[in-house]
Length: 112
Length: 115
Image: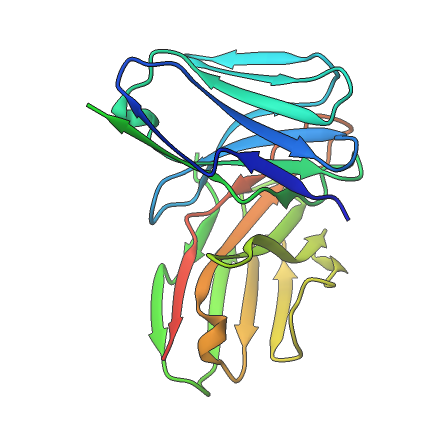
């Protein structure tokens, strides 16, 4: 089965700083999803990557998928307290988007 | 647009009682997923449906768990009898069938505590 490892497990940064969260897969990623979760709330879809070398951005968040499609990174530029939460990567193991295997998450705290 | 709607948001029940969680997927979506989230095991897929038909229930932990989807706009996850180890957040999610670029949308979850 496909396993996803996220690093770091937790991250505390000062407001305005840049940060990167990584997601590494034990197998080739056919699709990689990034979600954000706040305590007591559901998962909010951020981005989905499918092609090797693909990069997508939304506001101050950029996600990349490496050429080998086994590692993805999520980069936040000039972090804000609103970026705080748990970031989860989810892998599409069969290329069909029928179900996702998730990493354990990265807890992000942004200090004002 | 309404997202995936789950109810109840929070439930506290006694061990041995039956628990029913409900989900209304996004209109037009033909895939529905039930996930469970715990501190120990993270987010796990329990079962998913396509066009109201269960496709893969290999993640359902025990016979105490059952899920149904009687129509395209409603699904239930039932636990009978409930046990303390069932305490978790249960998420429902939905998506629609496209060749590529499917996005899976999650509800806000049902927080279950079994005492």
